[in-house]
Image 1: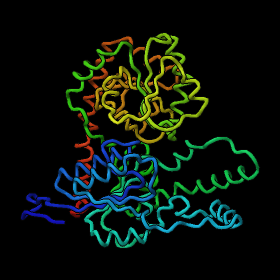
Image 2 (image 1 turned 60 degrees about the vertical axis):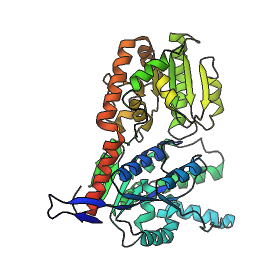
Image 3 (image 1 turned 90 degrees about the vertical axis):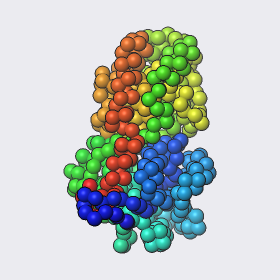
Image 4 (image 1 turned 135 degrees about the vertical axis):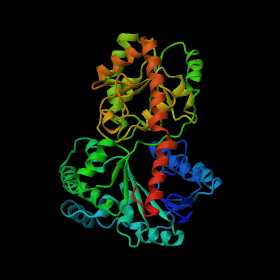
Length: 440
């Protein structure tokens, strides 16, 4: 690190080298989920402040359809990328007996690697840190923090977390186990996961600072002993600017029917229950109140739907648009952005994105736990059941004055509290402070 000036008041930050450890997805303005958008916001803020950033990824995912494009984009900005999966040895599965013994051991005496297999990259990551000599490390989420937690002589570390992994597992229970082997496997898996909360806390202990991107999860971490834990919303880069209301009016004027928008990967843990609620509880009420052809429900996102949900959504009013390269017209052209996620998990990045476009948002009230910026009747409409959500959508569609007021407040909330320059800038300031030996 390098400082200029002759006193504390006159200290001037010149440059800081940051190594970002991010599982699966590369930072990118357009992504298949919230991770690329959030981490890109931080990269942008680092570069805007004159710092340098290098990205280290592992646990590569075929879901990252933008990986090649993201690599070229980051290279054009001078951001290096190291993929720990390249050249890594493939683990042998072993005999059926060894597999059964490993499963039994995992259920009774789980290890860190059972939850976070990325720790096997520890030696490669240690070597990369020594070569890069960063002033500060940034770890995104628990799997990245776990991969660093067993290493020695680390530079100052800031870790950002969104979801609590043990809560993710509670949400993603899957179907009912059938057969003796499946039942035993499910029981051992549940036994192992009872130890996961303790591991989550333990891997965060080396961090100088923890940023929780969901308010209620940050409160849980502080209660469990992660004292230096700060809540900040997910940063979202402004893709449209303050002229969103004018553009929204122009695009909406071309619509012959009210457009209700759902955005998100269709087969993700967080969206499966939301889509089930949309199909079973919300859509029938919308058809009853607005008419079967009195509106359009646009579903945007890649992935496969469960057949029973897909069957219920095959209606005249529903348009499946799949993945779209440019999401701007979708956000700007919708009369209502519906976010019916019922689980008390994480932070709703799509709400923050919707706010940036000045959308009228109707959201499940559980989302306000992680995102306290979401306030009923102020900048959004919140409800706790499928039928209530549907009625709030109908209310917003029919009441143009209400919708306009919510659109205005959504954009104001974004500018005041969610804009990436402010949120990611705060994270960069935390890095500068811990590297400079000051408290954040």
